[in-house]
Image (tube, rainbow, N blue to C red; front, top):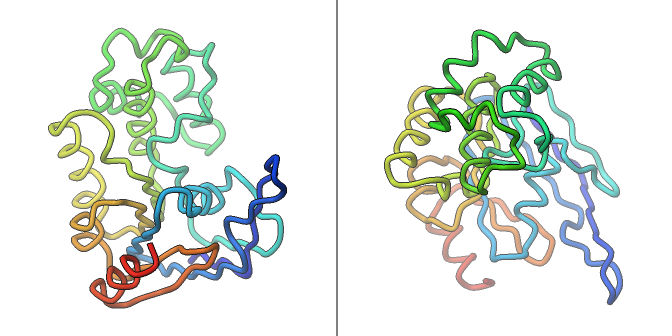
Length: 216
């Protein structure tokens, strides 16, 4: 389970603090699939980073009793001077698991070929995203954080990502941020709209989209 209680998150700007989350509450049960809607800049990605532990809230708390992935295709944790394989070994050490048995999967899934043994700082943005997704699938989590991951690669790679996530791991919890209505309707069972730093829950997708269109 993930329990978010009264979370507040602000960022400093030249015009003063910008509060993107203000008293947000959220509960994700085991196996639950939640979709989050919101316009650009509403704080969706900030919420995902907080849930993944990449950032910390200014106030409030986030309790996790299940393992949570980093945001899929998130590239910010890579060490640019290390190779793709060295980054895999480092991440596996962080999560206390073996790397050697995961190398064949990462090689096949990322489709990076010889670049997997080159420094990550030489990768294009798309290559980094493919590596990040492959690493996310190499380590098993109870809950996956998905922030517009299907923007990675071509349509064939999209299909491979969808199979890994929504078929092979259909028993896991997922939190999906997407501007694609079909993705959220197809894969989610509960829906949230993030607007003016507040998170509103809906059990019906039509009600969620009606509210989203009205306030967005």
